[in-house]
Length: 250
Image (tube, rainbow, N blue to C red; front, side, top):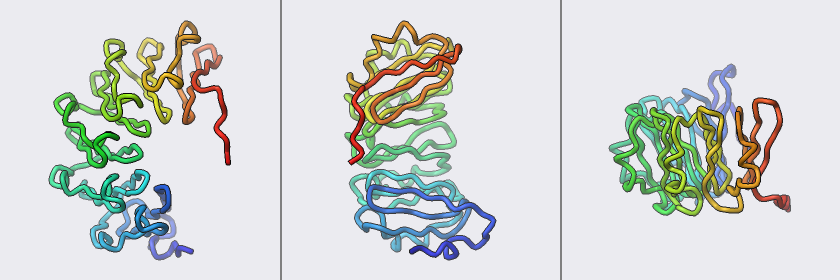
């Protein structure tokens, strides 16, 4: 059992948690302490970096590594080095970090100047060098299991990572203008444009929207499971598409 008092000096502050596949992290926003437990190979042991925790703001997780944004805008990582636990290659660039997003095996950090730094498994989005010149004015970053999508200040979208799981948006790139919102399943992205239409790309079984494309007008909201999307329209009707098969709970 974890004693919350070891983390929380002020009982009025809210505790936060993050998790990899086999480990947990517990902290309070702005605090200088962070507790981890679980499989050490999945980030459950953070003793080596414990002294670096100063004003923890956010903690993100891949399948087996954690990344903590600190009060000074730097990032501390630990866990499996191959899936984001080792950020030494980009540590000098991880300054003024505003937000961290993750795929299963890689991290993407949005900096205050609107640029993005990535690390972890290259095939899962850890290598963004091919699109780095496009990653300017980034407002948000979203992720499938192995690909990232960044919304820029001009409403366009930049993608990278596994091309089959959303990392290649070239087929719909001309349509990706004035993007207002992005949702992701484990293998596809869907966006709402300013005109209320929707654009989808990624693995075919999840993003095959042709049967309902004519109904996707005046979309107000999108939501996603791991393999399907649901869109709420202006008339309060709902349109769904994706894998019709339920995922077994066992």
